Length: 341
Image 1 (cartoon, rainbow, N blue to C red):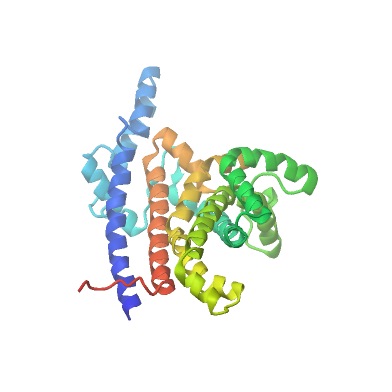
Image 2 (cartoon, rainbow, N blue to C red):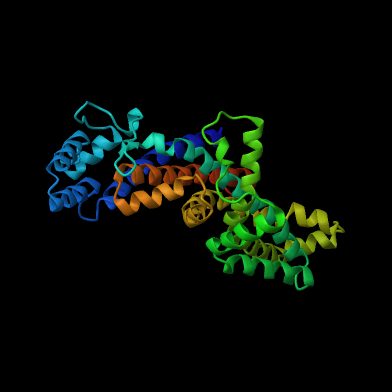
C-alpha cells in the first residue's frame, strides 16, 4: 500500500515536472534570434523570391509563430486555441517539421521505437557486463582479476564512442562479417514485421549496443567495485565470516545488496544519457534513430521537431527515475518514503 501511494505521488510530481521541463525546452530552443521560417524569409527576401516569402509568412500564421512566445508555448502544448482551435501536444498533434516538410510524428514514428530498442539493448549490456565484473573485481581485490577488470574499465572510459564506432565499423565487417550501418537491411525498411526483419535488426544491433554501452558499463563497473570494497570493510562482514558463513553466500546476501543502491539509482539517468550521448554514434553508423533528426533540427532551428525529441528524452528520464526510486524502496529496507514523524 505504501508503494502504491508513493508511486501515485511520484506520478503526479512527474507530470508537473514534465510541464515545467516542456516550458524550459520551448523557451531555450527559442533563445537564438529568429526561427526556421524567419531565417527562410530573410534568405528569400535577399534573393527577391516574393512568392516564397508569402508562403513562409502564411506558414508563420498557420502555426502561430507570429504570436507572442508565451502564447506559442501554450498553443504548442494544447492549452490555448490556435488558428484551428485546441490542437497541440495534449491533443496528439506534435507539430510540423519545416526542415523535412512533414508532420513530426511521421519523422519520429519509426525512429522512436528503434531508438528505445537500441538503448534498451545498451542498458541490458551495461548491467550484464558491469555487475559481474564489478563484483568479481571487488571480491578478488588486488589480484590479476582486479587489475584486468580495472584496465578494461579505464579503456572503456578513455575511448570515445564515435572512435570505437569507426573501429568496429571496419573490423566488424572485415573479420566478423557483421552488417555495416543502419538497424536493418535496406530491403527491410518499410516492410511489415517478420522473422527475417527481426533477425536483421538483432544482427545490426550488435555493434551499436557494444559501442553505446561500453562507456556506461565501464563507469558503472568502477563504481560498483568501489561500493563493494567499502561494504567489505564493515564490521558486519567480519561478523558473518566469524560465524562461518561461506564467502559466496556472505558476499551475495549482504555487501552486494547494500552496494546495489547506486547501481539501481542509475536507471533514471542511464537511458536518457545514452540517447543524448549516442547522437554522434548514430550519425557515424547511419542508425535510423532520433539522434540524427535531433542534430538536424537543432542546427536549422526546427523548433517543433527539436522540442518533441527533447521532451521525449525528458519523459524517459522521469520514468526511469520513478522506476529506480520504487526499486530502491523494495531493495533497501532502510529506505522508507512516508510521513516524517
